[in-house]
Image 1 (cartoon, rainbow, N blue to C red):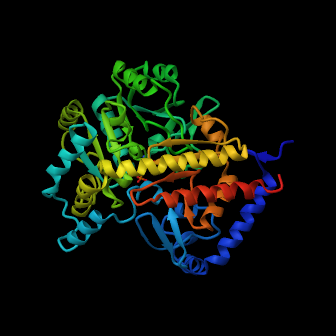
Image 2: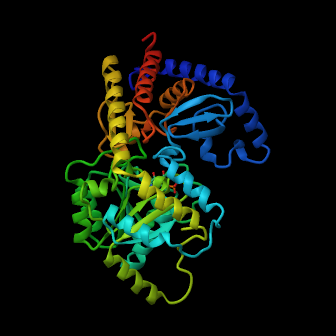
Image 3: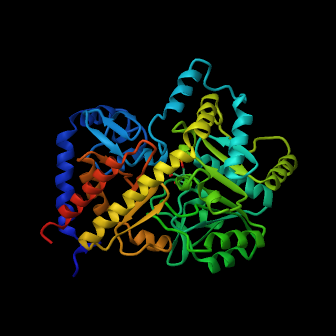
Length: 456
Ligand SMILES: Cc1ncc(COP(=O)(O)O)c(C=O)c1O
């Protein structure tokens, strides 16, 4: 029996992981103490259970972060390529965001009323993304949920369609995947009271015939997708696939929602602008206001008109959409500053150049060691995947994920001053990332590989 995972001996992965875990414990006494204290009132010592997903023996507690650097409470400094899993994609506390937060802080944070920033933001979003109408939500999860609800209201169709392996936030309708070709609830889902497979269709990414067949009955309100799947490793669209999705939607009166929350790493207008896509809805969250909780969702004039009609037809009452703090004054200030002064073409030029350098460097590391791994990129987002060829769909991507191997690599990197995303091997570069940061990370990935291969 071949007792290896993606070219690395299973026993060696366990050894490296245990050694790095012990090293982390010894080097982080303050984090350990804070976790123990917090555990009295927070399960596992964290205010959000995802914060325990880093593979560390206890959570890493942060003291501060700026630009591409993060410092923990034990005084260790990290070159940060995780960047809050995209929330800080433009660096921690960019100067323009810092300034507006300090300024707005003395003028009230939330009014449930618009401010003078609103017309400017509308113009900036329309110019950048090409959609004329917009709404603001507090998170990308909310934006996706609201847009899907509108899509059902407009079309009068009950169902939505997702691609296998997708993630669009904690949106109930999207927690469906394929198992042996059949839709099932995603494993691990808690407290799910209704059968999601009744109203959610799921097909493989890059499978246009399957999509066309699923849309043929014309009972799907909306297809929601990222332009490339980025939450199950990385699955890039094959040439013509996204155009085909768009065509199939149009042919069947199905609305198309493109979720650019991660793929905004592509460039200033996301993948949508770069590829001239024309979705009915577009969502961007996480980094859109420089790390302040905020998301935006845009739509066409036709959708806006249909929304008006649906609202009038529904009569008075609660729409089932919106949250009190959505579009608060602080978020609007940060959103405007980010669009005007942070998400610039110059910033992207630098981020993309750094990411390309990082991807090339890791490709060289992989090739030099003959590892059956590869690297995929979406602009400022690069990912090394411990499988020989890029996956075509969610099923192949899931098979290329190796939790223990990834955890061993993450711990090795963290103990040497580098953070990459805790989920798979995702890296992001921000405007403050330097060539030196990149060279050092590449060298450290090389050292991790050598360590994992030792004795092979
Ligand atoms: C593509 C995509 N959409 C939406 C979301 C949800 O973002 P949030 O957790 O900020 O609501 C995520 C989160 O990872 C995401 O990757």
